[in-house]
Length: 354
Ligand code: GLY
Image (tube, rainbow, N blue to C red; front, side):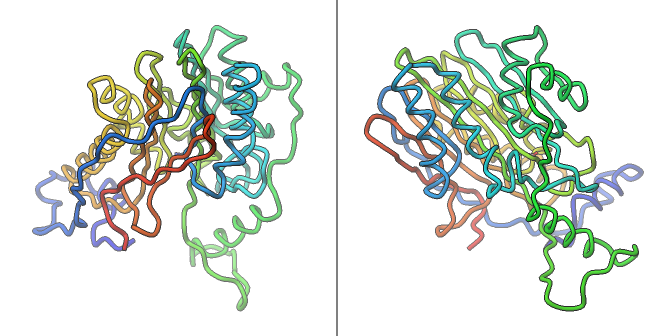
């Protein structure tokens, strides 16, 4: 952490002192980009959108687009696309193979929303089930509840025929072990003397998938293994409707990735959809939600040293994205597949990481 003033220290100290007494004379906030965003690119007809670029985009969007083109079944389409990263152990931020919590247990969060009924479902802290978005779909379609968590969510999944499986891959276990052995010099866990690279990074990942059918009905999913090494039971933004996912069938869809706590306390995806309702392009709406996070932190005297990204699609098929941090080399991406093929769009960012 580069800051002379970390969020953790600030929040810890803030409990007993006035804000003015805590603020350093001059806060070194990074430069803010103020580039304008124009209307974004538009998909044609039925389409599947996801919050990734060239590497994951084609394999995520293709199965959903195939279903949408052949049967027009929107919910099956978004679910099958989101299942791709959930089932792939190479993606260490979603589903099977995700980075575990601080006790080395993989706990998954996911949400789903269907435009025509404005219905939704979600699961949080779900263990042992590789495809949490499919369980979230069942919560939406086969219960009159919206959210199931922990052992209750797992029991519900088992009742619907899901198998309990080991979600911890050897690769994720080794990442956890490296973190555990380096996280503190006051405990009894010792890293090998040589040959192991230190990795203090807290991994976040997540994926957002949206679909739009030939009636311009929309649906969306957000799915994640959440913040790496989190406290057991920690729930991020991904299963919270209005935070990690929100859509309105008359307006469009939005989803978030990155530090979930910031997205929750700004109702991020709801904000993006409401800005699109007011006529903002998806790019502009995502930018406003990123700016809101920076603004509330700045107001509290906290340096933003984390990233959040929003992706959005409006009812016309226009797509956009924006992130707090990025660089020319590594901008935020949104991608989509439509009848013209696979496309990507690089969005803007507030803080240039160089
Ligand atoms: N955005 C994912 C999480 O914070 O859990």
